[in-house]
Length: 134
Image 1 (cartoon, one colour):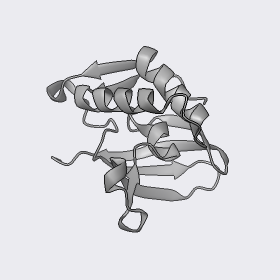
Image 2: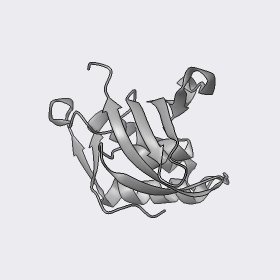
Image 3: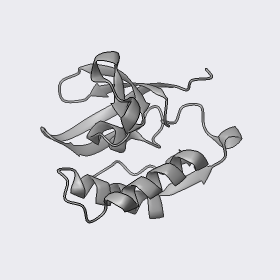
Image 4: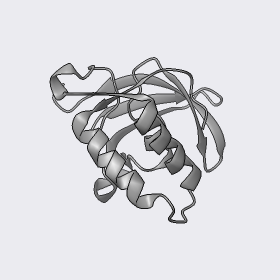
């Protein structure tokens, strides 16, 4: 995984959930094993964990509505980032553990993020982030 150097900002609740899930998957053979290992590394060393009242309004968290632009194709993608049990592509709900979800969690509007996707490395620009309360 290669990301433009920006510090992840995570909600305390999201951090606890992600940390537990990632640790349960480490060592389990999955197609996304490298991304999961990279996410764990970032969670442990590259993230700032904050309480809800201190969380930036423009940072991606669980249940955020996110708009990104694929820098290579120019295509814009809109989706809601959710838990795996709530994922539904037809409804525009993508799991936080899908490659695009793992790539964007904790990053802020305006961040340029590089991540290994099933079709190769993607460079995504976060155009907009809305939280459920907004």
